[in-house]
Image (cartoon, rainbow, N blue to C red; front, top):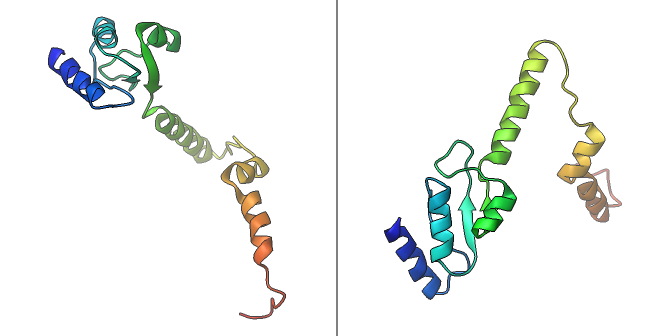
Length: 126
């Protein structure tokens, strides 16, 4: 831990905007990192990983300015896909989001609106 903190301190001296020490194993190590280093620190929270998954308020109190959750959205999306596939296997339709909302979120409506600017008067050409 001491070596990792020393390396992070060197990055701070070189002008790093955010400091990150990989995988503190417990809250005490997380506190040690934040107390020893200047400026904004980032916690990398992987559910089930080595670093404790603490509440946002506690991370902030410890001294973290940023918390990254690199797998959370992917895990949630994967769980939604598994649930939907199981539902469809049983001949049910998940219907989580209607097509109008899906189109809006993906940006189809904006795409169609923008593409209208490029429609040719000569639509008969293949």
